[in-house]
Amino acid sequence: MIALSSDCLLFEMASGESMPLSADMISIELVGGSATNYDEEFVGHAANAVFFYFKHELGRQTVSLGEFAEALEKVLHGFKLPARGSTCASVRIGRADLLQLAEGGGGCELFFFPRLRDELRLQLRQSPEVLRFSGLRGCVKRLTGAERWCARCQQLHDHIVDFLRTCLSAEVAASNCTLLVE
Image (cartoon, rainbow, N blue to C red; front, side):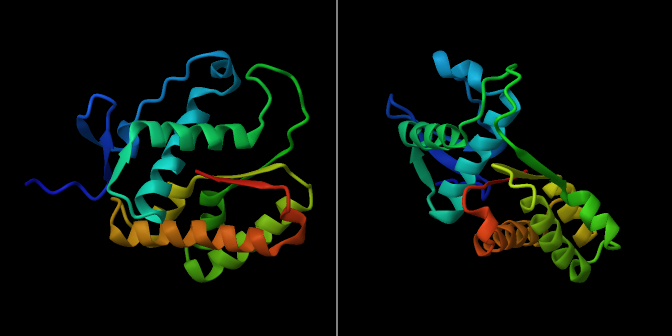
């Protein structure tokens, strides 16, 4: 038997076949009225988050296509974002660049995490509904000094996401805020 790659999940199709896919290989196509509510990049990030949930948080090796689609649907509906192209400004989005935070601290983890907590608190003062931290991959590579993704990168990646979740849950102002890390 061939071992499943560490970055893949085995997807069980409705036909009974199983197909190994990595997060980058998942192609999502929305059908129906909700398809116009989300742009492709956003859906891709949501699919990666659902993939991470099944693979790392639940420790699953196999997931049915229906299970994955149901979880993705819950995630997308949880954001309650306005339709694409609408000018509705009712959703307040706070944005921060993790790579800039890493570079500003001299590329050292010792300075990065306090700056990250301060940035999170600064963003929360504006009462956002969605708090978006972008540049995670570049930030991790900068802090580890790696040119290629390695086990140390994945470990730091997970640590940063856990740190943000912990800090967000500790803040009173974050009660209705959704965290998006990409």
